[in-house]
Image 1 (cartoon, rainbow, N blue to C red):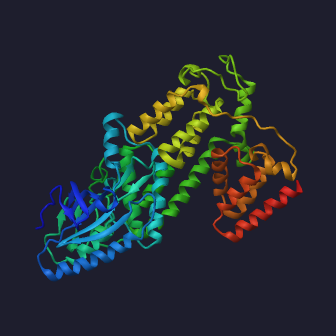
Image 2 (tube, rainbow, N blue to C red):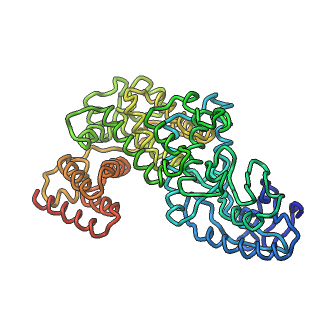
Image 3 (cartoon, rainbow, N blue to C red):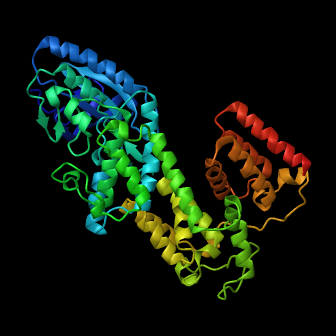
Length: 510
């Protein structure tokens, strides 16, 4: 058996071993420094052949390098970069980008010990929306992860989105080669049927554990197990009854809609599950849209409901309903003093402070990425009368990483009103072609309504989400800038041009 590599060892005259990160049934993982890249940190994953037969070792090297090339072609911001495959004597390594952060298994344990409760439904919905596009990306390239678990999903210090690590592709091919070797049977929770199966007990679906067969829906099954563990705080084997049926709902409080998605992902037969990550994303988006409409019943169109919540409307409410504590305001309508937000707005609904909401969204995006908009919108729709202090607490509580949540909370609470970005009320001009091109689009509800209708005809219901997110992140976009932004969101170049021409005719006619 090949022994562990001691710290200080130089591999392939390039990678200096710093320490052992982990050890499993297929080998070891080391933190190393790349001498050719200014001692940049990297990860060396070693695959240890449990044999001394030269012909098998030679064949395993060939197979190892071939499979490593498949992984090398993956380029996604939420997947560690595969930098190289390395052989050093009888040792086989994959070199990967080093991710400095915590696994979601660690995050869950930290959360249970500090907050005493698992993740909420809104949190796992956002989490799913962050990780499903990764699976869609790899599945489109005919790559199946095969080893999804909370141990293989990380939250990095430098990236607010979940990171998918430790692909099982090479592991599976490697064990297929050693199928006749009895050593590779069961080790460290990794189950190998006749040396040909990779996966983790409790997370992997039946077809993978029993038959060694994997499909895209196999990854989706394992992802659903991750979600129910996050929701319940209980390990998979505690959520299955004696008949091997999932009984997770008794330990959580989630909506029927989310439960239906998870149950379908967990179906025993692969054919009964969702067949792609995009199907689940569409269902989640549909549920979110339906929920928003149910919470805001109105005879008006969805886009008009959005206009009622736009920064301009909120600003006008602030101007007509001034805070009685306000003593000296500038042209933006904000008090000029250095009092903390909690002191100044302890009793004022946060919805009356658009400058604060804009600043809060920017800071939240630094922590959890683009889903900051979704989280803030859901929080405000559920509790529109939250004070600033209550709003900060609610948002902070929804951030899964305790350290990041505290950093966000400290950053927002230390903000003084004089630091708020100015939000000037734009002058409403006549809707000539010239004014439409130079005036903030948000000041023209009729144009936005028409724009929403046209965009929906080209890309469907997701048009509302794109339009709202664009205006929420860039409220001062001119009409022309908004058109250009929306055109770039349409995948088909031909249809994008048709949309641009259609909107252009409307601008000219008005």
